[in-house]
Image 1 (cartoon, helix red, strand yellow):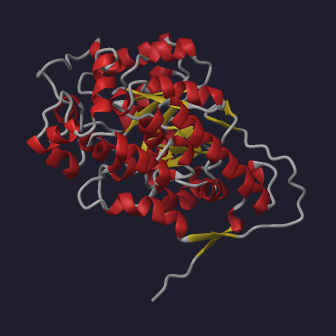
Image 2 (cartoon, helix red, strand yellow):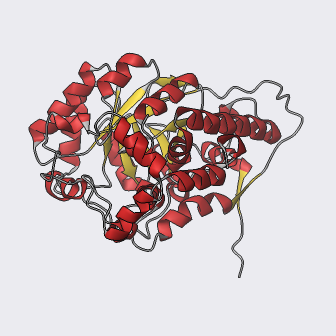
Length: 385
């Protein structure tokens, strides 16, 4: 199977599975506990139908939008994700370059493997810096200041990960950073020598957003211990309000799921929220962002930009979210599998396919611009007995 044979999410996933050692593939692919929420994320989009209009004159379709003050040419963006140079040696460099070429936004993670300063200097595309709330308040301030010094305009605080989820696939393979694999996990690396050659020949693996603040080298601190020991489960709304004021620009909360929390985010001055269950990797059994979207938009959509992520695999998924009021839709696995499969060309092929799908689906819906998508174009399907 080659990149040119990839036409959808499942094709990219299959190619990534063939190229990645199993522990790394499972890290991307897996969820928490029984992976119920992981499966629901995509299934939720199939529970509603689209009601198209006809004869609307849709020869030209405009996909541009503005989210949190950032103009983008597509209504999808590349969500911040960790450890990208494990998946492909280009890592975040491929992600940022692809986002720029398609005029959309990308996120840079605190657990990213390329410096946000390097990416901000090289690329004009809007960037969001995603970070976690640490027990050390001075560290939080230092990380925000570092992002500001790079010229990054939007801060994104992840609020659904005050502790790590129970990801049993990783427990079985022993996946961790630094690597502490089980015997079975190590054997899987031997079966994919091309990945290992690229990993060894590339620059030494690092976490530049954290390296200057936390000793992540050697055996001193694993990613798992980072979540359990460095992050602060006592974080509350007063803490976040202070950070919003300290940042002084667009501030976004990623992981909001309830109307009450959406209202509080708007009250403290957040510019945006992402309805997210962390790709089904945290609290298994939680609702999906898409299922919560309509009621949250009705409650706060006139005060704050509402986005969703989780399970988005098709252009029709994007249209359904936009019709219910989402300003933009975040992609995670949808670009990580293409990254793992082929680096920057993989992501660009995915974005090209996604753009083509959205344009075609917009035309079939009778919509020439995103603002023409409306809630009445969505119908919930009656449950079968």
